[in-house]
Length: 149
Image 1 (tube, rainbow, N blue to C red):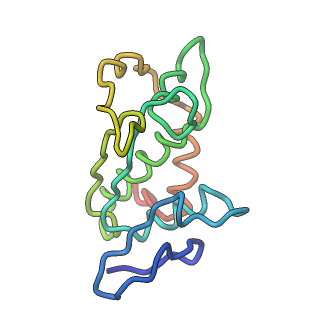
Image 2: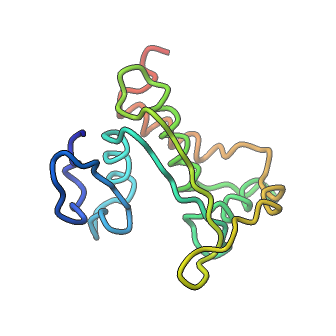
Image 3: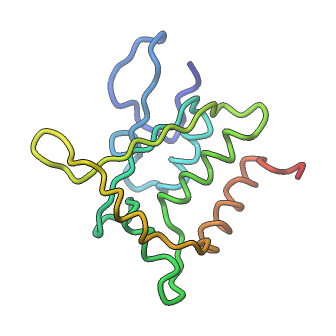
């Protein structure tokens, strides 16, 4: 079932025959690089299931991606970075990642979540995030992905 990354905390005790679940809010180590921990965990994952939400406040949301391309604005977007790295690893022969299965959720509501606001997807730019793509290339090269391309 894979190797537990050195840079992550085990969220709960688990039996070896169970799948390991890496949830960034539970497993990333405070004071250490978010990106280092995430990329290492992702490179050891068989299935990547990102929980994608739309909020205006949270940098870890699809809503924040809608700012990219507005009046030339660009920055490394964490959600986009996760998706780029995950799909590149999925497509890399011999990599651990076998599937990328995004789950779209709306705002927290009661004991669950509201529906994802699909009507807002039209706000996303058709322009690529050059900053995110460049940083994804750096991280992927460090993993040896695309070296033969």
